Length: 269
Image (cartoon, rainbow, N blue to C red; front, side, top):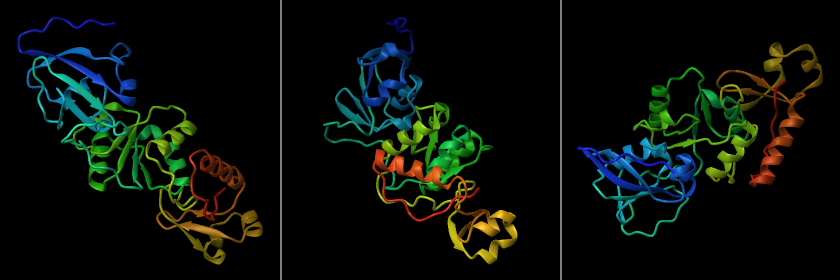
């Protein structure tokens, strides 16, 4: 186990412990017990937990010496600090929740590394914006302005104060990431598979074949009769060669979580 250096002038010594899945985000030698930390006098509990690798968006309750506190609470010499995730029951009164609860059906914003996850969320009908050229500052501002949950693999962007709701995706494989997000946000209620454009996140609408005939390849004109079009980008969808594979994925996710019955829909080639 690592050892902290003696406390220097202008620094204070505190003991910190992370509970639940927050423990997975700190150094191995800090897990499952209180560990000693030396920080500048006046450091807030927000800056303290983030200095140890835990973004504030992951923390729901912080307890200092048995008292629930806000993020701006400064730490003092000898304090004992407990950090809890939203999934962890804390029996303290009064209890200060550090972040408002996300909406029942959250709207998402994903960073550059999570494009495949964005497509999975859209496939299931969830509002999932993904802009691969967005900077960290733009992601933080958009998340705050539009009330979106920021999904990212980058701890740094979640440490920005503007981000109220965010989640650090642990898995690296997209198929496992969608399972992780569905479980983390308990997304087992009503949703609308095949209701969004996989390319831009726009809503899909039924459209008459004659209205999109000029956009269709020759074989599609001959073999397909039912079409949907994205209200945002105009992309046309039909039950092409990928449809059965996507339906199988939706069914697999429904059984695993379980999800609501799949809605009628189409996919593009």
